[in-house]
Structure formats: C-alpha cells, structure tokens
Amino acid sequence: MAYRRVRRRSSTGNTVAGWLILGLTGTAVLFSLVGAALAFLETHPLTTVVLIIGLIAVGYLVARQRIARARLAEASAAEQYRVAVHRSSQIAPYHGMTPREFEQAIAFLCHRDGCGQVQVVGGSGDLGADVTATTSDGRRVVIQAKRYGPTTKVSSPDLQRFGGTCYSIHGAHVAAVITTSVFTKQAAQYAQHMGIRLFGADELAGWITRTGPAPWH
Image (cartoon, rainbow, N blue to C red; front, side, top):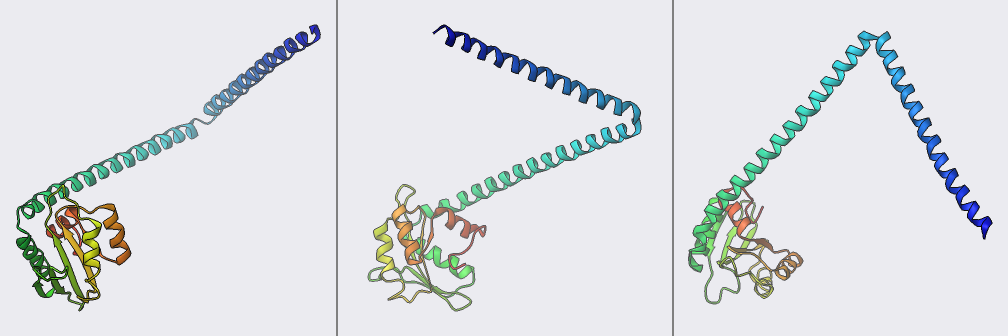
C-alpha cells in the first residue's frame, strides 16, 4: 500500500515538471521570435514601412467591404419591407369583396396581363371553375377563386373537389386556386401532387402589384 502512494506522488510531480518545462520552452520561443522580428525591423526600415502601409490598406479594404455589405443588406431589407407594405395595402380591398366581385377581379387581372377569352363562369353548376382564360401562347387557364377571411384556410377537400374537374372536365393546361387567405398543409400537399398552383394572399398581392408572377408564369 505504501509503494502505491509513493508512485502516485511521483507521477504528479512528473506532470507538473512537464508542464513547467513546456511553458518555459514556449516562452523562450516567443521571445526568440519577437527578437528576430525587432532585428528585422531595425535592419529593413523601408520594408517595414511598406508592410505597415500594406496592412493598413488591407484593413481599410476589408472594413470598406464589410460596410458596403451591411448597407446592401439594409437596402434589401428596406426594399422588402416597402414591397410588403405595398402588397398589404393592395390586397386589403379584396377582403371586402363579395365572392362574385372577387371572381370578377381575378378575371380583370387575367385580362390585364395578356390573357384572352377571359370568362367568369363561377356559380351554380360551375364544377369548380370560377374563371377561365387563354394565355398568349394558347394555354387554357382554369381558376378557382376563394374569397376567404384571413383566419379561414382553404382546406384539402376544397382542393380535391377542384382537382377532380379542372383537368378532366375543364381541360386545364394551368389549374390554379387563388385565395385572399392561406392553405392548409394537407391542401398544399394535394396541390403539389396534382400540379395545381396555389396563390395565397401574398402571391395574389404580388400578382396585383406586378411584384410577383401571374398564376400561369
């Protein structure tokens, strides 16, 4: 038992001594490097001046680049905010429309952006289609319009009813559901599976203000 105790003490002592030697060696190397640097500065004053000027120039360029990036990010954020405010102000009147007025407003946007043969066909027996149109390149667009309040989401059953008729009955090349609200996760999944384009309030506002694409783009 005594032998083990002596051995532990010896191991601890060796560890402390090792760290002490390592520290002294590191200090000596550091002083050596500093001395070499000072000697170089004394024997090469012109080179030293050039190096200092170079370091200052590099630091200035790096700082200038960071400032430019920060200003660009601020400008981008400000522009995004401006667009969001503009979109919000444009979508507000659509919330006050009747469902029929909303369909007519969607038809107007189709006509405004170059579609022909624009028709409002929503009503009894419409089989899911509210607005139909033909793009300038000949594609048939079939739209279902959902003028919902901000807290009422377009659900998966809404999409399924439209998905069952938009292609097989209405012959859509482009099928889209447009709402003043948003879509549930299940509705979005079904739309992706069926190739139906979804335009929520944000996308509709982008279309209205020409800061975003039309449904057929």
